[in-house]
Structure formats: structure tokens, C-alpha cells
Image 1: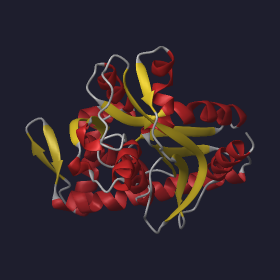
Image 2: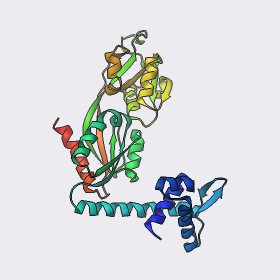
Image 3: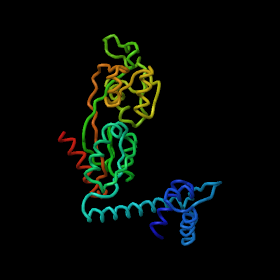
Image 4: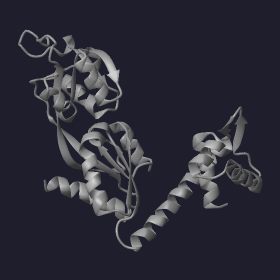
Length: 297
């Protein structure tokens, strides 16, 4: 069994298609098929069932997939250690970041870090806060950046910045309803929100909780998967939302949206990493850079 065979096996398993896996790996379909056949023949097992034009993992294949990924992860870690010993931050760093951070806060910082550390290879995926937490816990990401709370005991959490949330509506909409005391009537407002697990959604949840309410008590008209979709819906007159100031700053400036005065707390931006996993020099350097550059702004 070789690392190349394991890489081919994992790629085929994840794509469910030999030809597509071979294309992704830059090899011929016949070579990929031969690698899978060699594994099955050597150990007298069946890893895949052929279904139509695709393939599906057998129960044996699903069990082996976990082990194959673990071996490849260890090989990648060993390679990173050697790169560290060769001097300077080098090798891959996988970053999972929630949407607002990945879109508005992170890009310029990563560009500056990459310029100073050209041998480091940075890969960013966008998830909501809940999924970022899971990605770091499961080892799918080395570093997580979140806007909402995290709870898993395996994570180290450090605040790196903060963000201000704002309540906005389309500028051509009538005033929001208020109660007898003149306060916003949260239950009478039509809301547009993000999906469950989003740090942005948590802003409205916290405001409702402060008033003794839950989201079930509110009129939720739309649940959308991105900040930009929420902003577009609000500009179209779909209701009100609570969102990061970064997302709506230009729309407020050009008069498309109006910010409604309401007491909303600052939202924490936090960096999370696994307390028990080995960190390469590239990972350590990136974490230190993100923390230090924010502290010394």
C-alpha cells in the first residue's frame, strides 16, 4: 500500500467517480482504476460498488476511508514538520471563516501575511459559525474565525477584533412599528434573517431574548444563506434585518438603506484552534500575525 494509492482512493471516494477523480489528480482514468483494483486485489476486499456510471462506497470502503484520511493527514503533517525544520513558515494552512469575516475582515490580512511568508499556502473555506467550530474540532481546518459563540471544550478561543451590528430597513419603507412605550415592537416587524448557526442571526436572537422573546415570537419572512442576499432583500423592501455594519455601509452611505437607532452590543470576532493538535510553524505564525496586527492597530 502506498500513499499514492491512498490519495487516489480518497479522491475517488469523495467524488464518487473514477474519471473525475483522475482528472482532479492529473492522471489517466486507467491508472486510477488500476490503483483501486490493486488495493482490492492485495487485501481481497471490495471497496466500491459500481452503480450505473458512478460508484458507491461499500461498508468496508466507508470504514477504510476514515483510516486512509488519517494516514494522509499524518503524512501531510510529517511533510510540514520537515518544511519547518528547513527554515521559515511553509506548507498549507486550512482556514475556516464565517461569512462576514471571510468577506470583509480577512482578505487584506491574508494578503499581507502571504507577502511576508510566500512559502505558506493558505486555503480558506466559508462556513457559518457552527460549522467552523465543527471543522476545527474534526481537523478539517487548522484555524477557525467566528462571529458567534463556540462551546466545544477541545477549542482554544481568542478574541481578535470586534464588529458592530446595525438594524436596517429600505429607506423608502414606512417607519417601523413601536409599542405603547415608544420602543420598537419586535413582534410587529417583518424580519429577514440568516440561516441557523450564523453569527449574524445570533444578533437578532440576542435582541429578542433581551425583550423576553424568541425567534418563534417574531414574523420571519425570509431565511437566506448569505449577508449579500439579506441586504438585497432588505433593499427590495422585504422588511428589516440586523447585520454587520461592513455589509451595509455603502448602502447606508448612498441612501438605499437606513440604520434604525437601537442598542446593539459589539460582536466579538474570535480565533479558534484545537488545543491538542500539533501546529506547524506556518499555522503558529499565522495565528500570531492575526492576533498581533489587531492588537497594534
